[in-house]
Length: 127
Image (cartoon, rainbow, N blue to C red; front, side, top):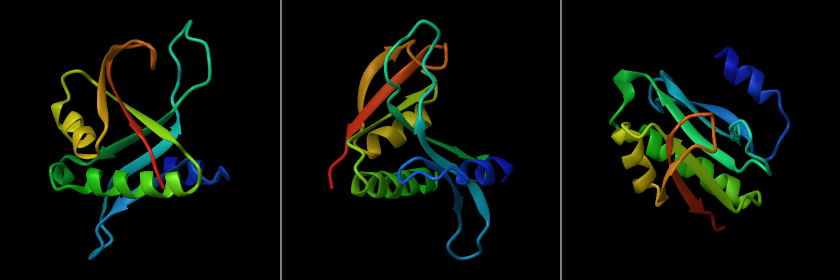
C-alpha cells in the first residue's frame, strides 16, 4: 500500500500504480503498474513504458492480471500512449500467458532492462 500511495502522488496522465481488488469485497489482490522501465547499465536512449503486475499467490490464475492490464492499457491509449512493453522471467510461463492473452507479441530474450535476462513482449495500443 505504501508503494501505491507513493506512486499515486506522481501527477501523470498515463503512468501510475493501481490496486487490484475484488469488486464484491474490496479485498486487495495485488497491483498493476505502468511506468518507464529501468534500462540496464550501458543501455542508452529513452526508456519505453512498461506494464507489470504483482498478485498475491491466492489471486493468481483467476484473470485479475489480464482484466486489470487490459483496462490500464485502454486508459493509457485514450491518454495518448502508443505502445507498452512487458518483461518476464524466461521461466515465468504464467505471466507470459497473460501477455499473450493481452495481445502482446513476444520479441525474444533481452538484457536491455533491469540488468538481467528477460523475455520481452510488446503491444501497439490504439484508441
